Length: 97
Image 1 (spheres, rainbow, N blue to C red):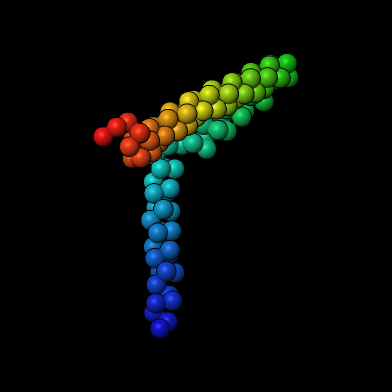
Image 2: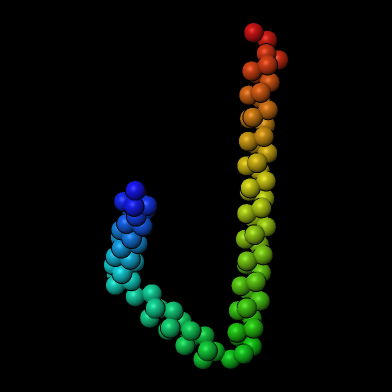
């Protein structure tokens, strides 16, 4: 009985080991920490006016990206609703047949 209770723990431990080995491999392959630190050091050397301008630019780009995403998702939802409505009408025999 206890073997069945311990099985999910063994599976989770194995999955965790696999994920940890993949993360270690990728962190050795891509030196992300050094890129982030060099970018941070570069940004901190900039004057405050340039940092403020970059912050405003990042906010504007983020807002425009969200608006674009909402527009595309709205179009996809409308197209899916029309396709589903046509399918329902076809099943009910509205189009003859």
